[in-house]
Image 1 (cartoon, helix red, strand yellow):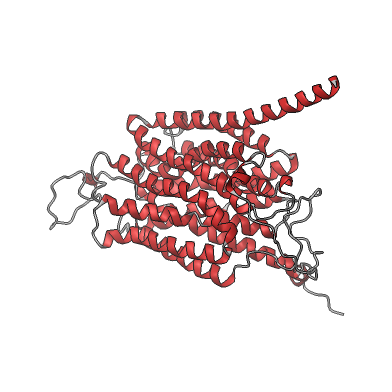
Image 2: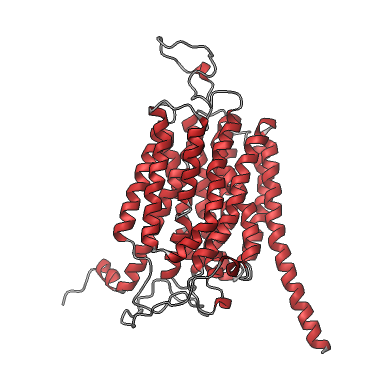
Amino acid sequence: MRSLAPGIKLITSFSRDSWYRFFILLLTFVFYTTYHLSRKPISIIKLHRNCSNVIHPADLNITDNDTWCDWAPFDQNNYQNLFGVLDNCFLVAYAIGMFFSGIFGERLPLRYYLSSGMILSGIFTALFGLGFYWQIHSLWYYCLVQALNGLVQTTGWPAVVACVGNWFGKGKRGFIMGIWNSHTSVGNILGSLIAGVYVSSAWGLSFIVPGIIIAAAGVICFLFLVESNVEQEPLLRNSSSNEEIFSANTSTAVETVEDHTEAISFCGALRIPGVVEFSLCLLFAKLVSYTFLYWLPLYIANVAHFDPKKAGDLSTLFDVGGIVGGILAGLISDYSGGRATTCCAMLIIAINNLFFFVCISSSALFGPAGMLLWCGALVNGPYALITTAVSADLGTHECLRGNSRALSTVTAIIDGTGSIGAAVGPLLAGLISPTGWNNVFYMLIAADVLACLVRLKADVYYYFCIIAINIYNIIK
């Protein structure tokens, strides 16, 4: 009797439900990759060039030899401040919209909500690039498009986290979400590479191409996304054991269980233990991460004197390190059982790393390459852990008593608070960078210190309460 091929044995060893879970994980990974892919081009076109080194057409009347090849109104000496304004239009709108996005996400079908957000985001991303072909030189046009794009991009994170949370148990959530969360860095890398192709020729395509990609992904989302496992008991129960994420022994014959619980209110979500503390911690952690996201290519170009494409390509090493950092943070927190401890440890190491980064990043090519990888891992590790596994844990906290309709709201509160830091960081970088890049890094170091202190203060308060209760019980 002939035996089955090993590959077929592997495929048939998993249940239908396991394949559905893998399919949902893959889909949501691709979807949020396109979200970040469409955000990245703005940091690549920030590369203000010295046009005196660029050959200009013979028939072009040149009035300023240093700025003729730059795009008005970003061709003046205050271009860094103007790009900071653009960043803030997106990030402030994103931060405000995120607090409402989770509420809508709990009450609307996730498939419709996510797909419409992706299509609208593709439209607004493409509209920014079309300003190049329509010869638009109004700052207000680009600010408006950025703000509207920031609002619709808030549909992404609460929706994909809620969808993954609906399908996966709590057993190895840190590790599996650490791998899954690499979509952020993958999107940044792809966005940098795509934008870098057109940045020196037709920068409009740096936005139009990512816009088409995310809109196409929105159509795929509408056609294929299954937002929850309706054939099983709710998967968001607290598990005392490390159940296998892709268990092959899962039965699909369980009677359908409908969730009749009401969605949690905004204030109710704030009362969940740990939500406020981790939200504030993420505020400072995301400030650091997004400052790197939006300003790293310009920093490399100015300090290392690379051309725009090479600076954009080198900046992707930070995101490669972020992939490793997110996975390590999830894995360590799963086996140690301490999400907060893992975050604080990585933040402390990141503080020291930023000092070294200031010292050696401009000394040699090896400096930026090696330090970018290491810095990306330490900066994005805590950020990735808080926005994924921690948010999912808090959204399924035992105090909710089985109410599975809190995950999107809790995720939105945590990420929305973090987005305030994401808006402040690039703005401060735009204001501080003219005084020297080292001052920008000192600002980032201070933010990491505050992130660590916020989390440590919460832990100290918790242990103080435990000690006080024990002393009271002994005396009593």
